[in-house]
Length: 172
Image (cartoon, rainbow, N blue to C red; front, top):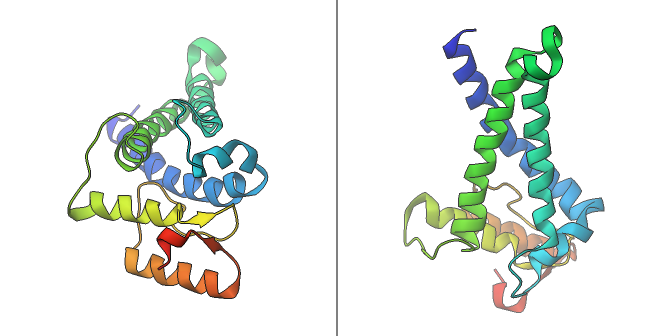
């Protein structure tokens, strides 16, 4: 096994996971999976949310890939890249937890960035939470954030078109 290939697989998986997260957030969490995701968009003082069940889904994806890559589990049928894909999914999960749950929602630590990309991430996610309900919305990714000014303009268009209901405190 080539170390460079393994590193490239891990990195490619981390990058691909942002697309997977974006698509599942937009089409699953704000679609048929809204029952698990709803409480994440509503004020509460609970330590855990139903939305945290999605972390278990991500962990199951990672564990499944580790199993597919393990000769201990599958013997000769093991597919070696799967181990590195599983590691990439795990690494994305750690990044997601630190950025989304830690930085944006401040579940683990308190720090409000005043500038730079961290501030942009927080602003973009706050704009995502500016809508009421699952319809419409902007910024479904977790690590890549578009320009907040463009997101505000998109929210304004959605509100004017009747696609999204925007909270009074967040009118762009």
